[in-house]
Length: 252
Image (cartoon, rainbow, N blue to C red; front, side, top):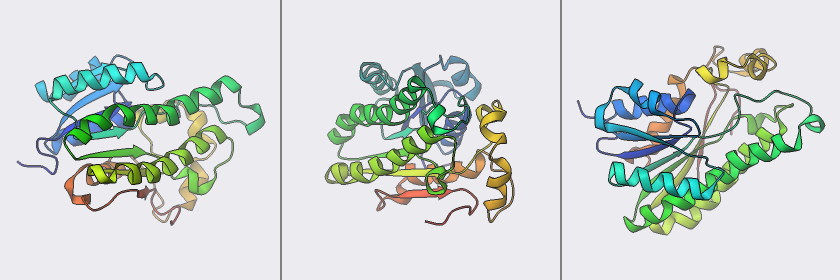
């Protein structure tokens, strides 16, 4: 059975668990080959996909340009090329909500290093490979939290606002090379990693649910389709856009 991503080679950062692993599973069902990159060893995640030589992985700290360069080189060797980058790695599920003035400086710096600089590092690393082939697709994972201005997670909200801004600017810079840069902004998605930290969900879950037009919890499968759409040729004439997938909590 053919899929929308037949033959595509896709790198997913933060791919060892949570939404990243869910995206990888969907990409495989759509016919792609995937490379899972994560700060933890993704070997068990790769094995769980049961996809043979269509799935591989490697460790990376996206906050380190050298680490990202090595990961991208390994992914290209394994996959043969890189058609799609899904910039999913982020610090979120481990955070403890707190007033902005109580956020430790080192935590602020780590969120920015991973969520913002990490995305920049990954785009820098894949851009030469995509430019050489005059095409490619970059899907940045933002968050609908930016439009809501949710309190007590100022560093995370600010970092995802930067992702949306970077998506727009990168689309301009990479357009002449045929490289599309778009973003998906999910609402609060109950992935396994998010469920593991009640602190980051409990303080906002009731308000999030009430704000939605579809008043139910959101699961990984609710956002997978939007990511596949932006990773595929179905969105061939789209770039610089952010798709909000949050059950109608915000309209942009």
